[in-house]
Length: 299
Image (cartoon, rainbow, N blue to C red; front, side, top):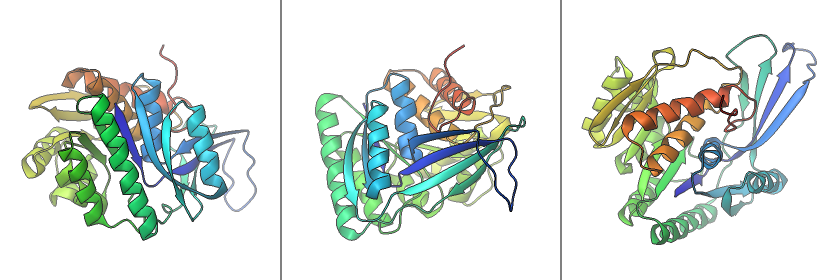
């Protein structure tokens, strides 16, 4: 069981264009919309890989209603925490040329007021308590930016509380949010730059960053490093995987799909090498098709 805590959900839109004409009109020839934000992308990818997934999602306004509807269409069970403000929209513009990058326009995470944060925390406690009653050691995944109105200390305390009830905590973040949540995690998934920032020292490789994260915070760690591949330190065992030689045109969401693939594999009992390979495969398959957290068919 995987519980995805979606504090910074969004409507994610991918525009495919022949060429982005800056300063003039560009008309997409294809549009893909998904229930997005990093945590919901993780949830969708893990669900597509066969994991039992539930989401706790903070959503507001007509956009939030649309996101909730799309999430249901994805087959992801969700508890919706209503917000007074409208859920944000994030856009990725992908040109037809054989490029492996996109132009991304991400609105800031939608603010929560104090009552909405309290409601979200309560919903998370209930969802995790239900999961613990059904499955031993469920995963709780928290990804992405921390919205305004969510107190970092309280967020860290919530993760510690959920961990104490019998859940395993996985975090993927950066900056102050990562600093506040990493001490309460069982697993930290970051890139090498984010690991260096958290640790306050440049990490020369993904493997070195995994070891440093474990030494500093007592966590298992998975660190990605672009074309240098990825490394993992899970349960004292190390593994690495080379970067894919097949580069897709839709990179947005690949890191989230990577985490979804990792958690789905760990949930079914995979070892470190198998789990890391499954994560890398999910990230690669995401980049081959439009839509964050959507995976291209195998083969």
